[in-house]
Length: 485
Image (tube, rainbow, N blue to C red; front, side, top):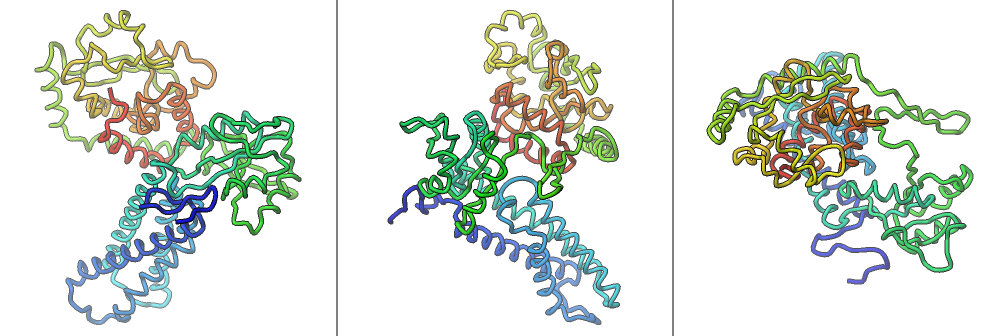
C-alpha cells in the first residue's frame, strides 16, 4: 500500500489518522450503534408493557409509532449535535448532549400527545426512554473506550497537530496534550517566531521545528497536519491570526486557539463578542449554593448504601493478621483548614509513626507527602487492602458526619499544610474526598506537581456530573490497581 508523506494508513487496525474519512466512518459507526440501541429499547418497552401481544384500541398503529419514535430519536440526537466530531471521544459534553436529546424528545412527545389529544401509554414511553437513554450512554462509553485504546497505543485515530507559538508556550502545550493521549491530539511539528529560527533544523524536545510564523501553510503541507493549534505569542497579532484562518479556508485543516488561561472547565467559560472581539468571560468557582447542598445529600445517601457486613469482615481480618485495633484514626485537615479525625482500616504495624523518621530518606515522592512502594511498616493484610483501596471504606463515616465528600482532594496531614504556600492552599476551599482526579489518574504513580494540578483543577471546576464521572472511573482505577501501594 502506497502512503503519502507524513500520513499513515490503516494497517491491521493498528493506526488510523483522524482524517475526514475516518471521522465519517466513526460517526457512521455511532449512528449504527445508536439505531440498534433504540430499536432494542422500543422492542423491550413493547414486550414489557404489552406482553408481546397486540395493543387494543391504540389510536396510532404501533407498526408506525415504534419506527417513528426511533427516527425522531435519531433526529433529536442529530439536532443536539451528538455527532459533532469536536465533542465525540473526549469529555463529558458528549454524554450530556445524549441525555439532553433523550429528555427533550420525551418532553416533546408528552406535550404533542396532550396538544393533539393522542393517547400514548405512559408505561411504554417510560420504559422506552429509560432503556434507550441508558443504552445510548453505554454504547457511547464502549465506543469511546475502544477509541481511547487505539489512541493510547500509538496515536491511532488521532489528529496530526502543528503547534504555533513562542518556544515556552509551545513546550507547555505539547506537554499538556501528551498527558492525555486518548484526547486524540498528536503533535507532529511546531512553528516558532522568525527571530528564534537558526540556519539549521531545530527541535523543541522531540518535536521538530518545521517553520516560522511566515510559513505556517507550507509547514502544514510538509508534515500533512490536519489541525493547527495556536498558543500564546507576542508576534501573533489579531490580524496575523485572522489571515491564518483565511489561508486555511478550504484546506480541511482545523484551527484551534489555546488561550493562556488554563485549567478552567468549559461550563465556567462564556464567549461574549464585543465590537468583533471575542471576550472570554470566566465565572467564579462555585463553593456554595444549591449544587453544594445536593452534593452533600448525595454523599450521605451513597455512604449509607455501603454494606456493614463488608466492613465487619475487613475489621476481623485486620485484627487477626496483626496486633492492634482494626481502625486507625489520624488527624487530617479539611475544608477551611479545620482539623478532623479521618478513619481508615489499619494497614501498618502499631508503631508505624515511630518508624517514619528512619524511612524519611527513602521517600519516593517529589512533593510534601511521604510514599514508599515497599514500606516495611505495611502488614500482610494491609497490602491487600491498599491494593484494592479497601482501607479507605471507614471514611464513609467521615462523609456521613459532613467532614468529607465522596469526591474531592485527598485530606492532607497538618504537617503538610504547614508547608503550603500560594496556590496549594486552594485545595482547602472544598471538602476533601475519598476519591478524586488524582486517584483515578494514577494515584501514587503521579508526581506531586501533577497530582496538585489535578486537585486544583477539581477545586476550580467541580460539578455533580464530574463527580459521577470520577466515581465511575474509580471502579476502573481500583480494578487496575495502578499506583496502589
